[in-house]
Length: 266
Image (cartoon, rainbow, N blue to C red; front, side, top):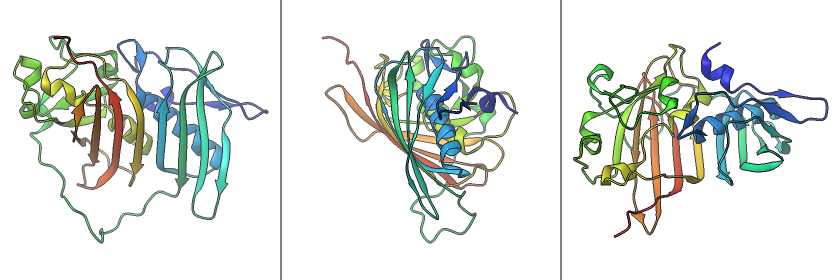
């Protein structure tokens, strides 16, 4: 069992109440990472619905989470032949911190797509990319001891005082302990890159308000390629669209989120 699977484990009591420990080290700026909490909620949804794959999940982030245990009393909203839907609200100190709706089903079969607009992105080899866990990286976070993130040098000029202003960041992502990514890890990978505001020299906190992820397949072993772009950064708000591709060049996850940012004062 890899570190990620252990860190997202949850138990249920006879009343249907789920409990999970928020594992140390899966945080950004001292707060549990949003993608990590998303995966934890999805694991509970799988347990509630009895299905083996999360097809989609939508989360609203309600309060700043703490490094403390979470509880959930899920509600099964639908149980059909092919899909099931569960509402899972993660709570701390009896206050909801994240509300989610998850549709679960069977893992999509590998097949030739009827249509695919774009092919897998081409990135420099991971060893030629920027390891965000490097000791000299001022943007390094505890999460990077758990998640191996290598950024495409062409999209990381902001780290050296040369932001491009392109609202695009690309990189490689995988578990740092050597375990292979699974479907739930895709939820973390889809939120693992630095925010696109960094590409404009805006380095303030960027809290996620809402995030929707589609899990299109089970990833093949190996590195994941992640591309993150924004369409509009304005008036303290930004969108981020993310694609996650596996080592077999398959699009295995898509995500879109709305987040806030703080512009520097004039």
